[in-house]
Length: 382
Image (cartoon, rainbow, N blue to C red):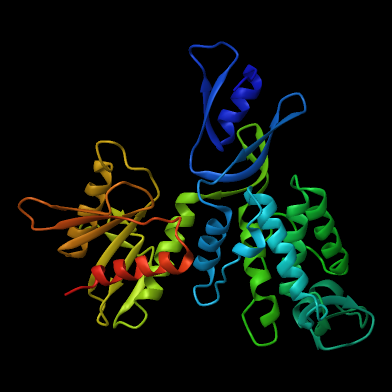
């Protein structure tokens, strides 16, 4: 693509894509995606900005399913009807968030009791003795108090307001922006979470059930909207997902759910060590243990394309190390792409077999979960 030197270097430093000068054509740069999908604006010295849009290879509805399922396996819904006409991730996601938030607020804003600490002229609630002595020693007023307020300043409302603000900072169509502006107007009395602050926590309950779907989307927005993320001296403002992480989160959540009825327990990102001195740390994506803690199966997710000569050998070495440290006769590598549905390699002298599986993510959700169920049964077969 045609870029001047400053723009090309800014794009290369952004971390969004791989960018390098085209050795054959001066003034052009070769740009290639590196696993992220979404949209972002890269600020270029001089006040210019380059808008980068990286389309997922999966249909938008499939990607939304992977994202939603990993956060709530029992509460996922197929949102294909709502996003079927969208070809880009950001407008589809923003439209879906607006729709779910409108549904959540249809009965009015959720209220709840929130702990408030303040300086007051009249006594209310409980006196904060330490703060009273530190700030107003020897005086009767003002008083440092804490009390519970019944208010709309709940974690649920603050998350919705903050996600709405984050999306409004991004390039959106007029109709989607209009829906988000109306949503913000409904939440105008709610304080957004300051940038960089820890997100408030919420717990699913009967009282906030109508908020659940909107809150899961809000958390995805707030964790993946890179607002003024600085890479060196380059500012990146956008909304992107790391597809390797999306696939890993989906696969491990789906495997754990598929093994729910079996004995033992499943752990995502299990921590182990390769050596006896516990100096070499290993973190397999998924390990299933027996009730007594003995490892029964190990799997690792790999979001990468198969090369003509096969999958990368480094993945096999990594899985061999996992199997050795966990004392397992088999290990499983699960790829999101590839040509062959299954391959296996028996390692010489140690009797360990490493299996390579491929999941077709572009299946209807039910079929994809069935495929994961078949894989789960292979993991724990006797």
